[in-house]
Image: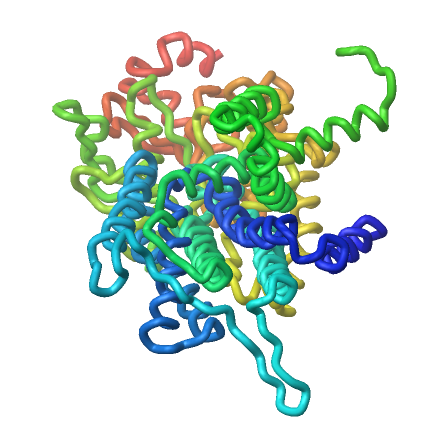
Length: 318
Length: 261
């Protein structure tokens, strides 16, 4: 309880402590990635389905929100739910096509989908301006009559907004994972045939994970678009997907906290590794490799091991 | 006449040119223990796969309560009350015994996402009832003290029992056990036979693939004998033990002498 209170106070006081500087920017980006990694952990971690196209739902959400704003003047309050619907809907359609077969076909289809989405964004120049991207996507405002206007264009306001959405996503994932749906997801991950034989539909559970994960990525995309004020086809790049995967796997893919910690660490770490310039990616790759080899359960497993060792001191190796 | 719980009608399965099952028919009524015996490769497990939706037969039909069940995915077969175990032990390795068994309960409740997010009285009741039901099932199979252990840490015999526990949690009307006594010692086999009889007394039907003839002969109401994919005999255990074709194909001449002596 005390730890939660400390965390809550730390998160809420961050803009006061840090000011509106680069660290606050990184926290906002972290929160956006928390939505992506938590959603992806449902698919990759809890259901055990390797999806390599998560960036597609992110990009799709960003473009949906951006186009609604720029072409039709719809503010983010309309664009964000629309982004969730479009990304969730796309996840549903792809799920219909491939979740019945799964395996290699599933993995390849997810990659292909992300690439197709990117090519559409590049080539429908009339609508998306292609590689040039779309600029001028403003953050939303709330006007309360008599009290004034809250402008989310400022970093502090946008930070609280993103934090709230990230919290909702993590709460949703936690509720699902700890419910009977979560038991079913574990069955699909651990032994699909055995699950099926006692009435657990692998298709239904995979679809729930895929749909929720897709919708969260759409929300993250919308927030990203209105925070950066800019979208480009780069949002669909495979490197975004790998970043999300690293956050999920190294954080701890079947835990709630893991993907959250992973998102924060792998948003900040690359920034602080800038001094090693071109070796940055190599260092990141090495961290990934070592973690997967020595501690496949990620940061959370590492923490639990350390705690157990601290609790039972000086026991010889068995 | 009411339809049998399970009816297998003229089922054939061909793998390439090889016939794994040839025109097999039989029925399982309610509250009966039906054993399927036969040499390795006789098609026993293939038969289970067909019944439970894991394999489509080349021809033939499977009916549950008189309704066609062919082409349904395994989880739909389970929903209709037919639950199987596997020849090669299958568990959820990284879950605890408690968590594994709980998964079987999903056969009776599939809450939706909104129900899970915002809660409902039905869901709360289901989750509360799950705790007691799982505890009861684990006591029944004798794994009560292992509830907190990971499935992969159990001994082979315990894993087989866990598989039965998971199946029981699905509350089957017909449980299909594929060689449940393999890997069990004599005492464990006796306990298994006892458990199978208790299940029938509680109103369940049991289909059993079994090589341990002591178990087969002591618990079965009916024995079905498969040989090269064909049903060569069906009857009460005592009659099957005396059937010339069965003795030569599977039991061996010694069996007849044992039974006589």
